[in-house]
Amino acid sequence: MKHLGRWMHAEIQEQPAVLERLWDASRPLARRLAARWRRDPPGLVVFVARGSSDNAAVYGRYLWEARLGVPVSLAAPSVVTLYRTRLRLRGTWVVGLSQSGQSPDVVAFLRRARQGGAFTVAVTNQPDSPLARESQEVLPLHAGREHSVAATKTYVAELFVLSLLVAEASGDRRLLSAHEGLPSQVAAALRVEEAASDLARQWQEVAACLVTGRGYNYATAREAALKLKETAYLPAEALSSADFLHGPVALVGRGFPVLVVASPGRAWRHLDHVVRKLRRRGADVAVVSSDPAALRWLRHGLEVPAGAPEELTPHVYAVAVQLFSYHLSLRRGINPDRPRGLRKVTQVL
Image (cartoon, rainbow, N blue to C red; front, side, top):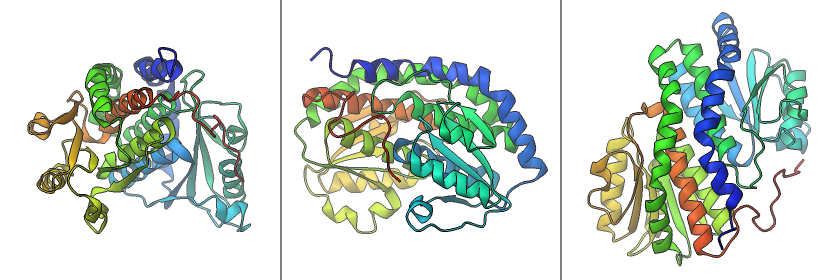
């Protein structure tokens, strides 16, 4: 048991150092791309990704639309790889996210986008990868090799790169300055491990769960559900808390496990309403939050450090859900470094 997940755990612990490197290494390129953005702002941004990178893209969609006022679309790579569509994308930025830079369908979409007139950017941990070669600009993640199949440090690095670019493009000095404090925020979040282990002990026998959040942390809910599925083999569905109330809440009865990602901010009042509703139904509710009021009356709580602006809470909250997934996999006797049927690079075209 002690050797299970050693890479995943080590890579979770590396994340403060990764963000330190990104803060130092990424700002010059982010400034240059931001200057291009301000000089010739696109009418549309398209993100293309798979897996954990797709969840980072969901975060990017919320952030870029909310802070830059530009419509953002999440690409369907099959439109290019299966249906051979020629895309008209002049005046558009297309951003490909892939930790390996080798996902064939993401690479193919970026190639077709460039042919269709888009300005293309790769966000990848491998700056010499096929995705990088198809792009006009490359934003490296500087995360070092990720050994575990489950993405942890590369996911948080993708969030950081996307938010840093927005901070530079918007000229928001407050948001930019907050990035410098993220390594210490993420380091403090590592202290949630004991609570994550305790929640894993209490949930080790559950058969399925729902995960919900809203706004920027809808992406965190999606990433939590993915991690629970791939590392602990727990069927977990992620839903926006707004969509959750439009039907799926009917699934929830007494004892049904629901993980709620609830950061302070614009979505807080709605999420507090959702938690209260779930408690009235007798659900087994666990909450990830930095607000003590959200945790006071619950049996399960993962309290992460406060201080990050709402836009940057996904970087910090991701650590809590990573640690919970890691400990749940150990409790269920699973090696999260090598999930069955998965490889680090998934070849889909």
